[in-house]
Structure formats: structure tokens, C-alpha cells
Image (cartoon, rainbow, N blue to C red):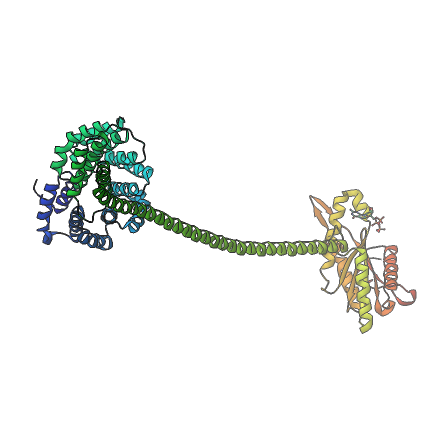
Length: 570
Ligand SMILES: Nc1nc2c(ncn2[C@@H]2O[C@H](COP(=O)(O)OP(=O)(O)OP(=O)(O)O)[C@@H](O)[C@H]2O)c(=O)[nH]1
């Protein structure tokens, strides 16, 4: 495999080879590092991440971790940040920084729903599963291992998810050596030609045989996979295989081989290593020495065993504790966010309430205004109809002029005022002649028209201050204010002559008619209305009596003289 001219493609190709063909990966990585000058900033961050991955793979956390932190802080690519964080989390686990490892795991797992990139997701699930298994959270570890298989990134096979799932199931005692899952896992890894994971699954099976008291099967299995384990050179697998062999031989009573295998574990370990395999190897050595009565050697191995056991158990409890602490932190943060969101909710509710109160206030104001407007409207309407009715009550229904009662009361008021300033007024009574005949000849409707016609004629010579009313039937009254008797007689006669000269013409009915008029003046009758009325009435009576269609003024001392004999008949 060689690099393509496209740097982005080459970077991806290199990344996909990192576990399936590590040698190729290293070669391509070296070549990419020669080409940094032609790379974009983003491509340089990707390369920096791959270099860090390689450092981490070699266990060189001192170099890997600062580079990963750098990528997380500065690359600004969420996918790269997730991958770098996942690798960092695994480094922390391997270098026993459990608390930050679990804190990071919590963050990454919380972000999983947003993590769409298949490889980034796969890495988070894989490392989180291993970390959780190390802290005794086997069920979660198994769940994450199953999730890994759900969306495999390019270059990955179901093999590794199987290996992690089986390890988690074994740890929680949910697996037997005859489980079909073991066979499936082995087949997946053999198909993928991933010997490392094949060996891990075989070793799980070897442990299960031992748990089930079938040490001979463990020995047989280990001798079958020994060449491949040697070839892979995977340190942990070699330790585990030898330690397992030691325990199997011890169970079989083959002390020599047990001893050899246990010593082989010590041979490939560093002096200050502490792990489960070393603990088990020392235990086997101690038991053999004790069995053979070699007390000093037995005591010596026992001390080593006890140290390893304490160290290993410390490590286990450190992981469990770190997990618990991280969970507590997460819980505390969750409570804090819940508290904050509750406070936010309360604030929001308060704001809504305030807005509603303002809205309700406005609504009340609008309601009050509407109510006020309605009341004003109602009052105006009532007042208007009251005024209307009052006016109606004062007016004559047919002609629209004052009715008798109102005419009299207004005339009373006017004569009273006039009396105070000694002004002149004339009271004129007008009565149509032979009106009954008009009704009888032409009908009542024509009679009404004659009455209206008369009113319009009478109005013509009047001033705004004069009073005019219908006294009943075909009789009208006029109070001419500030009017001496002479002028009053002239006005009255003008009315009479106009009536006489202006017949009513309705639908071909031409009705000629006349009126008799009686006049009384304050000059002769005084200001008392009753007296004025009586005198005007007497003058009218006289006008009728002496032949109608004339104006008669009331004369003092009962002497009624014909005021305008000149224009009048009779
Ligand atoms: N069409 C009409 N007729 C009315 C009205 N009010 C009263 N009358 C009539 O007016 C007539 C008055 O008749 P009389 O009192 O005998 O008087 P007259 O016929 O005018 O005779 P003299 O006054 O003596 O000239 C009656 O027939 C009433 O019915 C009215 O509002 N409309």
C-alpha cells in the first residue's frame, strides 16, 4: 500500500490500518510525517492525533497525552476531539489515573447520542466498556460491547466487540466454557484473522475450564494456542497464558510443570509490576513450596503473593472508588442542573405571571373603558329619548307646534317676564271657518292637510321669540312679543288674508277656506294670561258672530270694535 496524492484520503486509509495491519500503519504514518508542508491545518491536526495514537499504543503516555490534550483543545473538529478524548481516557486507565478516566468517560458517554462518526463512536464504546469492566461494572461493559457491534466503522469486524463482550460476561459469571457465544466470538476473530483477540477469547475459555474444574482441558487449550501467542508477542496474553497454565498444572497435581509455568510468569515481568497474573503465579509457587515442606521458600513466596494480592486488590478498589466518585460527581452535576432548570422554570413562570398580570390589568382597563363608554352611551340615549319624549309631550302631534298645555305655560312665563319690564304683547286666537264642512266634504285627511297648511301660513310673519300653539281642533294661538296692538292687528290680518288667498290643493281637491281671528293686547287687557285669553276668545267669538273671515281686536270696557274693517267683509 502506498499513499494516494490526496492527503485527506491517505490520512483516512492510514487510520483504518492502525489495528488490522499495524506494520503498514507505521510505514504510512512515517510517510505522512514527511509531507506536513503540503497539509492543511486540519490535516496536520489529524496527523498529530495519529502520532499520539501510536505513542499511546506503545504505552508512551508521556508523549501521547500532551499531544491528545492539544488536539482536544485546538483542533476544533468534534470528531477528532472525541477520538482523542477516547484515547486519552484509555491512557488514563492504563496508567491508573482512574478518577479523571471515569470523569472523561461520563462526558464521552453523555455525548454519544450526538456522536455520529462511526469510528469515534466505536472507540468511545470500546474504551468505556474496558474501563467499566475494570471497575466491576460488568453489565454496562457488556452493553457497550454489544453497542460496538451495532455500527462497525470501516476496517473493523465483529471480532473485538465479541472479545470485549465475552470478557465482561465471564467477569460477571454469565458464561460457561460450552457457551455458543464463545464459539461465535472465536469464529468472528478467526475470520478476521485477528490472532490477538482470538487468543483473548481462548484465554477466557481456559479460565472457564479452570473454574469448572477441568484443568486438563485448559492445558490442552493452552498448548494449542501457545505458538500463536508466542508469535504475536502480546505481553498481557503471554503473562495470562503462563499463569493459567501454572494453575492448571497445580490443579492436576503436576507440581513441576506448575512451577515452571509460574516461574515463566515472573521471568517476563518487571520487578515492581503488580497484577493479577503475578499474584496467581506467586500463589501457585507458595502452595507448591508449602506442599513440599520448604518453609523458607514458601514464606518468601507467600510474602510476594501477599504483596501482589494487596497491590492488586488496592488497584481494584481504586478503580471501583474512582467509578463511584465520578458517578457521584455526575449525579451532583445533574442535581445542580436540575436545580438550575427548576430555578429557570420558576423565573420563567414568574415572568409569564407578570406578563399575564399586566395583560389582565390592561384587559380590566379596556373592560372598564367599555363599561364607561356603554354607561355614557346609555345615559346619552336615555337623555336623548327623555328630551325627545319631553319635546313630544310639549308638541302637537299633527302640526309639530306647541300643544295647548305647553303654549299656555310658555305664554304664562313670557307674560310674567314682560310684565316686569312693561313690554307690549298681543295674544291672537285663530279659528278656521266651517272646518266641519271641509272634513265632511273632502274627508278627514284633507282636513288634516288644511290644518298643516294653516300652520305654515301662520309661521310666516312670526319672529323667533313669538309663541305659536294649537289650542285644540282647528283653533290656534299666537303670542306676539314686544308687539303693540296696531302691529299685532296687521300681522293677524296678514295671516287671515294669506289663508283666504291660498287654497289647499291635494290630489285635485282644491279647498278654499278662511279663518276668524280674535286679538287681545296687554295694553288693554293687562299681563294676566287668563284675562288675555278670555279677551282674545271674546274677540274671536265676536268675529265669528258677525260673519267670520275677519280680525277683531278686543276693546277695553267690553267694547269690541272691528279693527280692520277696511279689508274685511261685514
Ligand atoms: N281633520 C281634522 N278635523 C278635526 C281635528 N280636530 C277637530 N276637527 C274637526 O273640526 C271640526 C270643528 O267643527 P266646529 O267646532 O263645528 O266648527 P266649524 O265647523 O269650523 O264651524 P265654525 O268654527 O263655527 O266656523 C269638527 O268637525 C272636528 O271633528 C283634526 O285634528 N283633524
